[in-house]
Amino acid sequence: QQPVQSPQAVILREGEDAVINCSSSKALYSVHWYRQKHGEAPVFLMILLKGGEQKGHEKISASFNEKKQQSSLYLTASQLSYSGTYFCGINSGGSNYKLTFGKGTLLTVNP
Amino acid sequence: NAGVTQTPKFQVLKTGQSMTLQCAQDMNHEYMSWYRQDPGMGLRLIHYSVGAGITDQGEVPNGYNVSRSTTEDFPLRLLSAAPSQTSVYFCASSYSSSFYGELFFGEGSRLTVL
Image (cartoon, rainbow over all chains, first blue to last red; front, side):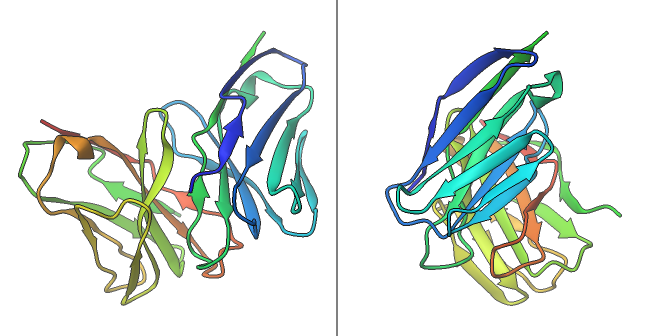
């Protein structure tokens, strides 16, 4: 079952912050975040493993709340280059090899 | 280093035709997979493989066939194309079969079925 991402879309001005959420109805073993620019392939941002881990990638960080079965992606002081669609992918057990993606969050950063 | 290479990039088929989307990676990755991407639906897993000779179904396997005879190649076959298979197809690979590794995606293949 696909994880639920919110919001579906967000528009920011350069320098503003944003949070993208990813929720699952099943227990999560790992959460993966990817960004896709229009017409391009998805690009890996980070992986979070269960245990409440928080990771960072430049000014983009994420948290993983195992109990709430959700992850959040934090974009700080957004740049024009952050524009794109963000996908969370979840591995919820059973097979380690099935990564199920959400429907995506379209982020637009304007000057 | 080419990474993940998909061919063709664009293809138009008629209903009922068959075709193969090619995927090759030169990173010696164990894990390879095929996703389809439709507007508003995100990326949905079609089939995946954790090594040569080993394949399994994903979320939306119907109408597709795969095989993995070598580590490098993972072709996706459409047996009898239908308009519902119009989509953008991505091949992805990862070094880790335990799935704690990042996925490297190919550039995608845009398929239109008339």
